[in-house]
Length: 80
Image (tube, rainbow, N blue to C red; front, top):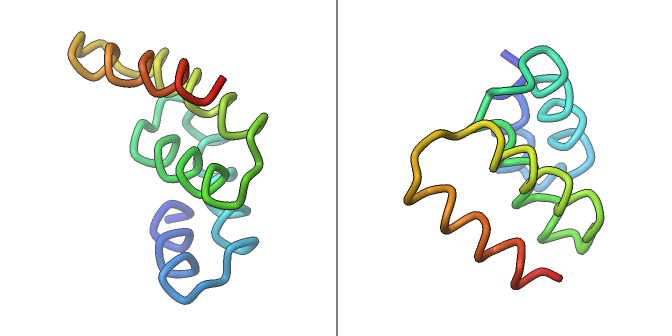
């Protein structure tokens, strides 16, 4: 539910409400890949670099698909 609320707030441009709901979704399920990615992208767009990197690292842990892992690793390196 929090993930979908985050999506709705993000579409309305309510960034901080979106962040709040995405964070709650990740707190409830730390392996919720879609919520993690949404939060990472939102942090990145807001230029919250440290928080974005934390979420990208969490996304890396949350996926087992090797091609996705390689893309995330490359993305993290580009952010550093």
